[in-house]
Amino acid sequence: MRGYRYIDKVTTLRVDRQRCVGCGNCTVVCPHRLFSLSAGQLALSDPDLCMECGACARNCPVEAITVSPGVGCAVAILTAWVNRLLGRKVLSGCC
Amino acid sequence: MLDFIATPVGPVPRVATTASARDRWGTIGARIGLIRRNYKVVPGLYAVGSPDVLSPVLVTANYKLSFDALRHRLSGIAAWLLVVDTRGINVWCAAGKGVFSTEEVLQSVRDTRLGELVSHRDLILPQLAATGVSALAVKKGCGFRVFFGPVRAADLPAFLRQGKQGDEAMRTVTFTLAERAVLIPVELFLLAKPLLAILFLGFLVSGIGPSVFSPAAALHRGLVLLAATAGGIVGGAVLTPLLLPWLPGRQFWCKGLLAGLPVALLAWLLSAPRLGAAEQLALLLWTETVSSYLAMNFTGSTPFTSPSGVEYEMRRGLPMQIAAVCLTLALWLAAPFL
Image (cartoon, rainbow over all chains, first blue to last red; front, side, top):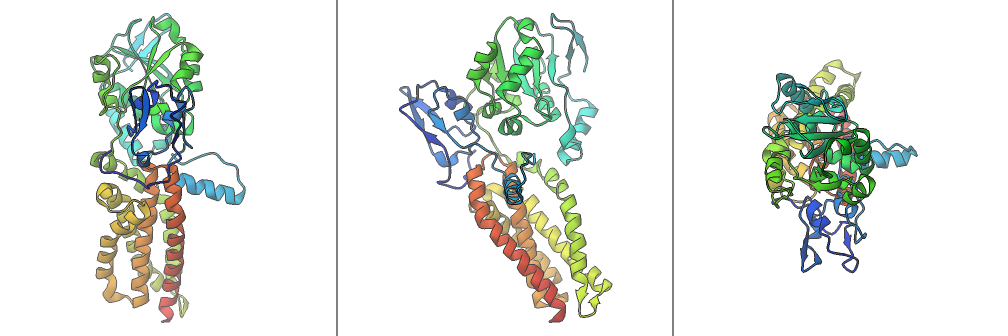
């Protein structure tokens, strides 16, 4: 993913190192390779590269990782805004 | 489909690992957008090669492009394919929407009686399914252990050879020029309907003038507006995807402004001699706005934009775009009276 950076300092990704048990699941699933383990300790590099897909949190056995997952899609967000404005409850997206 | 294999859980269809002419036409149709939303495979078990009780089980979505991407990379490999009902949506989008989920995987394993078909208890899922599937919960729910395979099906043979181990390259998403270019037809196809509506309104608005409504002006000015709209589409839906990594800035609506600039200037140079100052300004604004908006929409097609980031930039870009549309409309309506 070299050559691509999105907006800094907005990610909802949070890591609680106290809880981490060093299973390494997050190091496997992250599509942007943000996690690594060194001596059983979780290390997070460059959290601004996180796209909030939620794979890490979904596969963490001890809830040491939290993120508000979603699809980074303007059309989906706009649809949600319009639906909220009109008081509609529709859960259908675009893709 | 080639034939059926008799198994303890009933006949299982065996599928080819090469693309037929029909597959190729289907891929084109889906990529253009004609059949994108209804290009499905019946969920369930399939086979490639001559698999036995020890053969690996590869899990995928029931979008035909996902299914084809998988099976066409498996020539010379014997495996079972477990197609999960993801409502015809691809792996990553389905996982993000929660339809490629732990529950769906458990349901598929139960429905197909997979435990009676193979002697091992391993499932290989695409890595990008991890957004929706918890490996732990699958293990707890049906006893099968989930191995997350590579991001791209092309790396599966190597992944299997390495004993279900993936390297960093296999596990990293990419967004190469080819991967971006292939998205352009669908971006354009999805614009067909809104474009027709905009053009209808555009011709209507273009005809308004001192003589209330002039069909000649509607046609003449409407065509100019059409050209400006087409320019904006080229900027936002063609140039932005192609030039994405080289367009400076982070926010897509700004990238769209940059990508639209050469097109807007070209359209301006070509049409300036025949138009007044207000109309020239309106056209520049309109091309840039269309390009900016479409570039912003392209966030949904990239593999690196976070929802927090998209919301952040929409709160800045959208008000600007709305203001620009209002200004364009005011200038365009006022021009015949100036």
